[in-house]
Image 1 (cartoon, protein in one colour):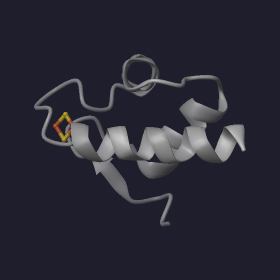
Image 2 (tube, helix red, strand yellow):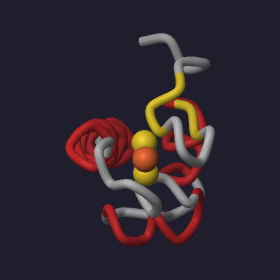
Image 3 (cartoon, helix red, strand yellow):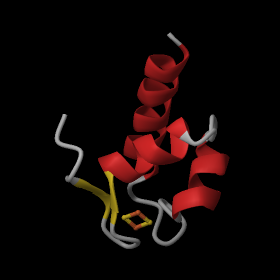
Length: 62
Ligand code: FES
């Protein structure tokens, strides 16, 4: 995965910023939204952000 790729254009949030939020303890979409702002504007990225959260949480906890 390209960690520098933007997942949320509105808030300029990258894949790597989602990973950092998860590694810092966020485990749900809502917690990642609070930590990064991802998905808090137009919402079009929410499905992608959710998938990233699930992937990074499973990597973190395994
Ligand atoms: S692209 Fe993420 S809130 Fe608009």
